[in-house]
Image 1 (cartoon, rainbow over the protein chains, first blue to last red):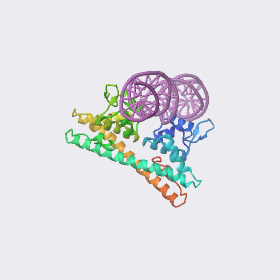
Image 2 (cartoon, rainbow over the protein chains, first blue to last red):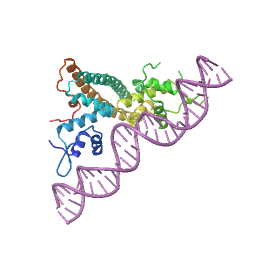
Image 3 (cartoon, rainbow over the protein chains, first blue to last red):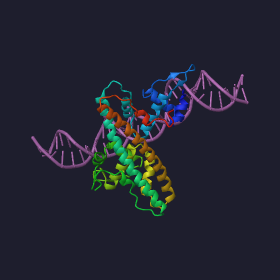
Image 4 (tube, rainbow over the protein chains, first blue to last red):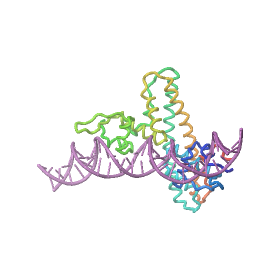
Length: 134
Length: 134
DNA sequence: TCTTGACCCTGTAGTTGCTACAGGGCCTAT
DNA sequence: ATAGGCCCTGTAGCAACTACAGGGTCAAGA
């Protein structure tokens, strides 16, 4: 139930320096300290860090993640604000889902064509090509 | 059929400086030049840039993108190599797809709860929480 | 024609988001 | 009591852009 910074890092595949960096820029709260001045984290901080790391991995900026976290933290009933942020990010998430699905399809095709021993024409670039290719 | 660097930037929402940066580090080929030394791009370069930008947006590093592009460019029948790279990235793409789907679900829930005028308990952090929360 | 504005060029320096030390303290085990 | 592994606060470096500075090109209009 209580974690050191090292535990947090192991649980989320995050370098200790990165966790301290998130604290410095205010993305993670300053945690309690032990008598020997070690950072002392709980379950909530672990969840928050995991969210940050996985959202980063999905290509969101730290500022965007700050906005997403504010949706969670907002108890002021500012529904208009929450709604706007959530809708914006939902659009972006749907776009990313479509791009990833297209990329997945072409990776699969590349693997399958290798299985058959044929170097088929690879369309992996076309999967994420411009809106109007021709 | 022939684009300036500005056209490329507009078509892919990329800053001109970024395109020159990709050229400098070898991610984009050195394009032909006009008589007045302007960069002169074709459809292939546009497709490649679009791929790079959208893959970046999905959280892939420039080195990973270099590897993905090599799948496309490889005509040497090095199926083992292509297969390994493609399989690695397929796993990562599937993980990202699952995370995005979870995030989408919680964004949708946040929007819906706002529609109802109720500030429901927001589970957006839990969507991307650690593997074993409790 | 010439000049004004929107484009392009090469550089270099700054920003974001980490990442890697340096120099030092705590803590468990032998 | 000391060796190894963890923690602390800094500061400096790296990746991937981003923003000028200082200058050339070019189509359009007075």
